Image (tube, one colour):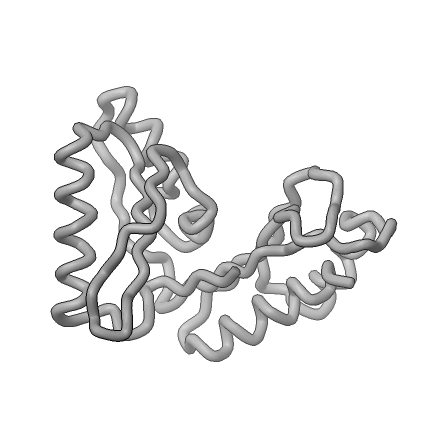
Length: 163
């Protein structure tokens, strides 16, 4: 999976509708802390709620490098009743690409120097999980001024960890 922040084309009525739905859910559930709301857009421009996560979520991992205050810090601030931090982005674009396990017995850590040698600006997070086909074992994040550059770098770096 890939996450682009901000979401391309995230302006206008559909964006406003998504924000309204998320806010209504958060208020209705009396959420304290981070709430991830995953929505699907239908071909007739309706939004369907697919998943709710009342905790930091994989879809927000880009905030570790991409936002002034990460989702993890923001969650702690909220549940500890501390002032919330800035959600401003640190760059024009943040792109996160998941690293999925494969059948190889190679250590993911052994591949790290190669990925960084080719993509010096990429931030790599390996979760220490035993790789299995399709299992999320990490992610990479890239910040860039041009979306296409961030996507290319993130995909390129993630590819070093794929079989």
